Structures are given as C-alpha cells and as structure tokens.
Image 1 (cartoon, helix red, strand yellow):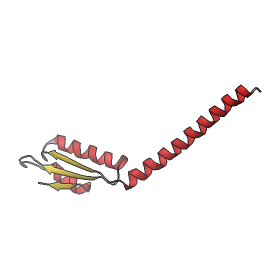
Image 2 (cartoon, rainbow, N blue to C red):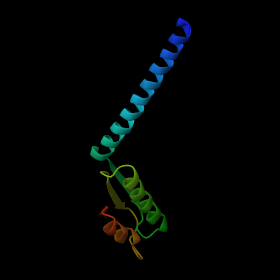
Image 3 (tube, helix red, strand yellow):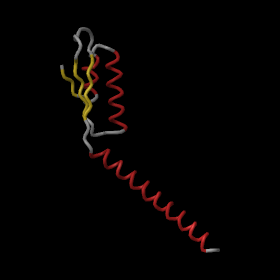
Image 4 (cartoon, rainbow, N blue to C red):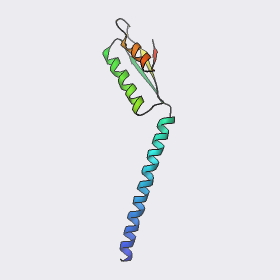
Length: 99
C-alpha cells in the first residue's frame, strides 16, 4: 500500500476516533447538566380555563423528560370563578400555585 493511501486511512481513523470521543462526551455532559442544572418555568393563566390544564400537562411532561430539576410555578390571572382545575393539578404534580 502506498504512502498516500496509508495517509488517507490514518485521516479517516483519526476523524472517526474524534467523532466517537465527541459523541461520548456530549452524552455524558448532557446527562450531567440535565440532572444538576436548575431551571424555572412560570406559567400565567386562568385556572378555570381548559387551556391552563393543557399548559400544566405540557410543562410537567417537559420537566419529566428533559429537566427533572426544573421548578414550575403557575400564576393565577383569571377571575377564579368556576371549578379551578389548575389548582388541583398543581397540587398533584408538585407545581407551585400562586393566586
């Protein structure tokens, strides 16, 4: 095998090894950052509105899948008349509820 082809193979091997190390580093660092990072999400809405229920469910899903250390706060800005779904869901899902 000529020197040229040996050089080409060496370059491909070096690029492959670098890619493997970079991928492993990204996986490890992403997991460590996910577990130990702090994030906060504040939701504003009417607790009696069904859209608020959807917001709370989506926020809880994001916390469960991507940021387990994230704190979620729901701030009530509606009139509060009717059945307040958001208050009950916040109590069940460990979400801070502010009136």
